[in-house]
Length: 120
Image (cartoon, rainbow, N blue to C red):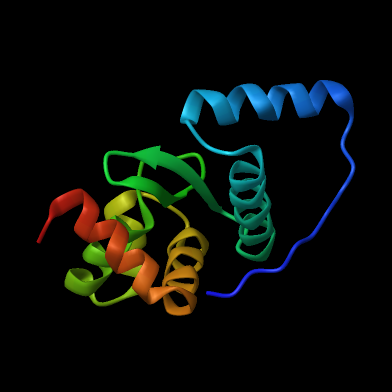
Protein backbone atom coordinates (compact mmCIF):
# COMPACT_ATOMS: atom_id res chain seq x y z
CA UNK A 1 0.00 0.00 0.00
CA UNK A 2 1.41 3.44 -0.85
CA UNK A 3 2.42 5.60 2.09
CA UNK A 4 2.92 9.32 2.64
CA UNK A 5 5.18 11.22 4.99
CA UNK A 6 3.31 12.88 7.84
CA UNK A 7 5.07 14.71 10.63
CA UNK A 8 4.05 15.77 14.11
CA UNK A 9 5.59 17.22 17.22
CA UNK A 10 5.68 15.41 20.54
CA UNK A 11 7.19 16.29 23.91
CA UNK A 12 10.74 15.09 24.60
CA UNK A 13 9.66 12.70 27.36
CA UNK A 14 7.17 11.02 25.05
CA UNK A 15 9.73 10.85 22.24
CA UNK A 16 12.12 9.06 24.61
CA UNK A 17 9.37 6.65 25.62
CA UNK A 18 8.57 5.92 21.99
CA UNK A 19 12.26 5.39 21.21
CA UNK A 20 12.59 2.89 24.09
CA UNK A 21 9.54 0.98 22.93
CA UNK A 22 10.81 0.92 19.34
CA UNK A 23 14.20 -0.43 20.45
CA UNK A 24 12.51 -3.10 22.56
CA UNK A 25 10.50 -4.22 19.52
CA UNK A 26 13.47 -3.91 17.13
CA UNK A 27 11.59 -1.34 15.03
CA UNK A 28 12.35 2.09 13.68
CA UNK A 29 10.66 4.87 15.66
CA UNK A 30 8.79 5.93 12.52
CA UNK A 31 7.44 2.39 12.03
CA UNK A 32 6.20 2.15 15.60
CA UNK A 33 4.76 5.67 15.44
CA UNK A 34 2.86 4.76 12.29
CA UNK A 35 1.53 1.58 13.90
CA UNK A 36 0.38 3.41 17.03
CA UNK A 37 -1.24 6.19 15.03
CA UNK A 38 -3.09 3.74 12.77
CA UNK A 39 -4.31 1.66 15.70
CA UNK A 40 -5.48 4.70 17.68
CA UNK A 41 -7.39 6.00 14.65
CA UNK A 42 -9.07 2.59 14.29
CA UNK A 43 -9.92 2.51 18.01
CA UNK A 44 -11.63 5.89 17.62
CA UNK A 45 -13.51 4.68 14.56
CA UNK A 46 -14.53 1.38 16.20
CA UNK A 47 -15.14 1.97 19.95
CA UNK A 48 -14.74 -1.30 21.81
CA UNK A 49 -11.88 -2.54 19.62
CA UNK A 50 -8.25 -2.44 20.73
CA UNK A 51 -4.96 -3.95 19.58
CA UNK A 52 -2.42 -6.16 21.31
CA UNK A 53 0.50 -8.44 20.64
CA UNK A 54 -0.40 -12.09 20.13
CA UNK A 55 1.41 -15.23 19.03
CA UNK A 56 0.75 -14.38 15.38
CA UNK A 57 1.58 -10.68 15.69
CA UNK A 58 -0.66 -7.68 16.38
CA UNK A 59 -4.36 -8.49 16.53
CA UNK A 60 -7.65 -6.71 17.06
CA UNK A 61 -9.49 -7.65 20.24
CA UNK A 62 -12.56 -6.62 22.20
CA UNK A 63 -11.51 -4.09 24.84
CA UNK A 64 -11.92 -5.28 28.40
CA UNK A 65 -11.91 -8.93 27.33
CA UNK A 66 -9.31 -11.46 26.31
CA UNK A 67 -11.15 -12.27 23.11
CA UNK A 68 -9.79 -11.53 19.65
CA UNK A 69 -12.16 -10.20 17.01
CA UNK A 70 -11.58 -13.30 14.90
CA UNK A 71 -12.82 -15.43 17.83
CA UNK A 72 -16.06 -13.42 17.95
CA UNK A 73 -16.48 -14.03 14.21
CA UNK A 74 -15.95 -17.78 14.67
CA UNK A 75 -18.65 -17.94 17.35
CA UNK A 76 -20.99 -15.74 15.28
CA UNK A 77 -20.61 -18.06 12.26
CA UNK A 78 -21.79 -20.94 14.41
CA UNK A 79 -24.39 -19.06 16.48
CA UNK A 80 -25.75 -17.18 13.44
CA UNK A 81 -27.19 -14.25 15.42
CA UNK A 82 -25.79 -11.34 17.37
CA UNK A 83 -28.03 -12.20 20.33
CA UNK A 84 -26.78 -15.80 20.60
CA UNK A 85 -23.18 -14.69 20.15
CA UNK A 86 -23.61 -12.08 22.89
CA UNK A 87 -25.12 -14.72 25.21
CA UNK A 88 -22.19 -17.03 24.50
CA UNK A 89 -19.73 -14.38 25.68
CA UNK A 90 -22.11 -12.91 28.30
CA UNK A 91 -21.70 -9.50 26.68
CA UNK A 92 -24.06 -6.78 25.58
CA UNK A 93 -24.94 -7.20 21.88
CA UNK A 94 -23.23 -3.87 21.12
CA UNK A 95 -19.80 -5.46 21.67
CA UNK A 96 -20.57 -8.22 19.19
CA UNK A 97 -21.88 -5.71 16.66
CA UNK A 98 -18.70 -3.66 17.05
CA UNK A 99 -16.49 -6.70 16.39
CA UNK A 100 -18.60 -7.64 13.37
CA UNK A 101 -18.48 -4.07 12.00
CA UNK A 102 -14.70 -4.09 12.29
CA UNK A 103 -14.59 -7.45 10.51
CA UNK A 104 -16.85 -6.20 7.73
CA UNK A 105 -14.45 -3.30 7.13
CA UNK A 106 -11.25 -5.34 7.45
CA UNK A 107 -12.14 -8.96 6.54
CA UNK A 108 -8.70 -9.81 5.14
CA UNK A 109 -6.91 -8.53 8.25
CA UNK A 110 -9.18 -10.52 10.56
CA UNK A 111 -8.74 -13.70 8.51
CA UNK A 112 -4.96 -13.22 8.54
CA UNK A 113 -5.04 -12.80 12.32
CA UNK A 114 -7.11 -15.97 12.62
CA UNK A 115 -4.73 -17.91 10.37
CA UNK A 116 -1.73 -16.68 12.35
CA UNK A 117 -3.27 -17.93 15.59
CA UNK A 118 -4.90 -21.22 14.62
CA UNK A 119 -3.19 -22.03 11.33
CA UNK A 120 -6.39 -23.44 9.87
